[in-house]
Image (cartoon, rainbow, N blue to C red; front, side, top):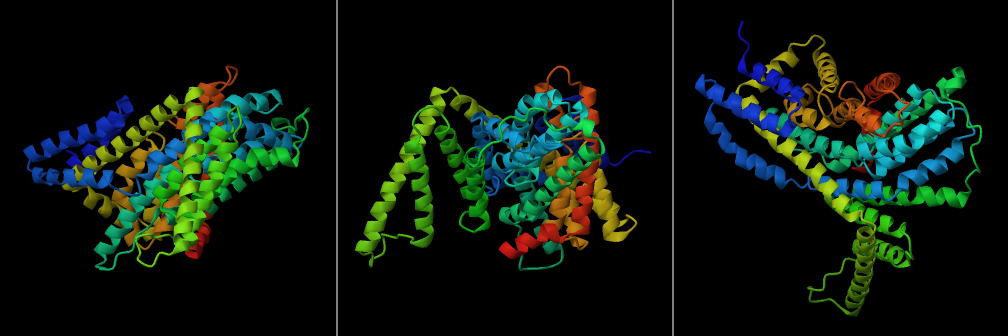
Length: 516
């Protein structure tokens, strides 16, 4: 029996990716090969490829995706500013005297870094270098310690802002619009990045609570696997705690607050985060940081003034008050620019400016190359009738809409063993999400279930990225087998998190409903 071309195309892509070639090349190459094969066998119309130019242009001009390089820049800057080290050291001394306290501190630091950097690799490597040796020396079970570091590092994908949520918001918004078109609606609603960020906040904190509850329960039942520190060190004072926590919290408030408050679009908020991270890194460098702090404060005042008293000097009725406000705002902007210039000069002097820019460009290029190549793949796959086949499969699932959703979640979970979250988001979700929404599932709730599922792909062997990151940063006495076995309970906790969101949809829908 000969398999249809659309099924062969999907199987061929999985095999090609597992061979180890770059994903973007495999996506475009597989699409080109099967487009030609389909044309030669009369199953594909080559004129469909004429839409590729519009798809590429639409991707590169997408306002939502513009935020990706800015958020990546923000995370890379914070990675180089040693903020993780200070947070971990302070939180470790704060909670180290209780059983499982060091593990709890790692989870809390992971949540803070997730909300301020959003980069899984940076968080896992930082905590693998700093926290993992400390936990092992303190008597923690190496497997448990490895699982804690891997899992807390992946919180950067579910706690906003994160590249996963940005890509997911774009995919789900397109799916939601397709579903409404299919229903014959002429007034189309969309899903914004702000709504997805708001929907992800409480589920992310729910996962943090699940991790902490598990750690405390495990430490209570088996004290030997997560003992209290024998010498926790001097308990940090209020000033020391504030010094470690306030900077990332301010950055989180500036970015998420501006989005959820409706003050800025996601791309504008991402630029706020990028500049804020640069100023924060400059202020933490050696030397007097007074000008940088004044510059940051000046930019904050400008943002408030722009919201409360917008100045439009082109109006004919602009009077002395408007001109005075314009002069004040101009002075504050110049002060902010001076602070940014000092921060950039300090970063260049420390030798971290070039690595920051290089890392940002590398990660951004990888993400956009995958998205662009996936648009080619999806166009050919739809041209071969693959979308209709997927729709027929989902509609034939026993259990109706719930059965179809269980099947899709299981498929995403299995694909997460082999594929990256970007690949699953841009290849699989555009095919299944519109159908699931048409079946009656709330798009925001659905997005959160999928987001936690995709987050799990960082933990699942053999290709979980967090496992690779930790393997590179872990001390030699931590074996790969210990790392793999250590994440198994946390994979089960991820499934528990999915079940909680499934049974209590209001966790993901309440905040967006309140804010938007």
